Length: 355
Image (cartoon, rainbow, N blue to C red; front, side, top):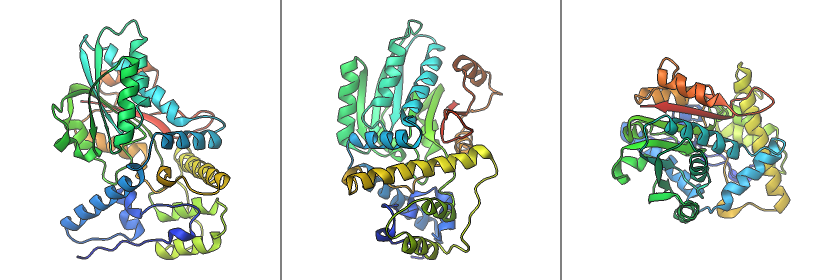
């Protein structure tokens, strides 16, 4: 084996940061992660996915509440996860209303406790112009929250055709009848260092929609940008922690520049605000959240990268398609569309693609 994986000292950090294997695979080399053979790269991807399982599969429904609280603290009372749910529901319900009446099958990636799927169902149920019906297939690595999601949707009157405990890369192996009218994800698909766009595209029917609502920024692309975030934080071992981070990831210098694009730079600054708020919550209670703790290093990516992934898998995202233009007109959204208020920032954005 010829694999190299640098490890920072978590005991010196303000919170558990997580392994660098959790960041987008295309950025691993910036962190000093190296391999020689394809089989080794495959093993690293699996290890990165296992890191996410260690974080999320043990959590329960309150984990999402913690994220919402940190968002409200960071962004003047705004829960951007909820704003993303609402925008995602608007896109899906508008799209389905534009189709001939049918029973539409919806696959959700990372269902959590079911709040995003419920938002979609309530949006359709309350619309007199929707003449069809929907049934959901819910997926998540955590079985406990899946059961909560199923019960929540069924209590509201929604049809749940199935729940599947799985990671998103397991769609080809674990999803039977893979043709869906809609695939949706809200702040879930970035829990993967190698996002399986092709698996999403293959599971869609012709004419179907992939609706994504996510946190977008490039702040994990380079350990130097993470270093800049750490500099904004206050914790007892800050001096040793910063030095350990620089040494581990072979950083030269003390200042690392943000992107020139104001919306991209602000998205990175915004995610710093979120993690400072989360650190405040940790300090407030005097310890971490145990199995509900969340870790900063993730596979958050810019909107540009998501668009490239969609298009390489054969999905359509641009207004050159009449269907895209029509859906943008009906929703009032661009594609992609930021839902951050008061400033230019791509942090919380929707992005949809059609097959």
